[in-house]
Image (cartoon, rainbow, N blue to C red):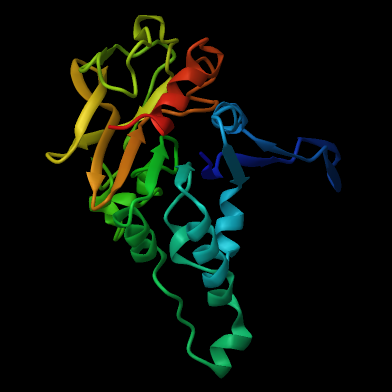
Length: 262
């Protein structure tokens, strides 16, 4: 059975080091484009019959309404990681001054379209990061979006980052849940950060994570209409997940998240 997965985010452009050789001259050495989500993409591609498209958030921002609709028609699973809501709200045409002068500039609301896609049976998943959920200084913005109540966790309205150079305690609330069954989470590597969220009554917090004696959702899920929505509030890639991606059970976990029934 074919499973079509659209992965967005966790790409980055590195512009290298800057060398200043005089008061009048400086240069940046090296430019590279990196997909930090590649470990997750590789894990999902191992699912039997999987087809995966992975794109940076700036390509989402540039998608026309027609191209966005085609992606949703194609996808069974959509994964966002470090994708701020501005990538869904805005479009380059809103900054095209020629269009300001000649016509009204509007686009179909992509949050409502994505919401309808989930209600019709799609599986939407969000990974944590500086621009996920509320994000750094609230820049993620998901708690103020039209998609907020679709998520299986409630977002804060302000900065939601918890970070530490030590491991955070975790606990599995349902060892028999299909997404985590047979996985030894006692061997989970140190996680270096996560987005603080609140549990939602309609959802199940399958795994929790603690900071300063308080427990928060780490892996949560619920149904929305005919579809499913899941959230992993830490990173599936570096930097928060720099240890997580080395976990021997990393690929098994993601494959169960996207293939089992729950």
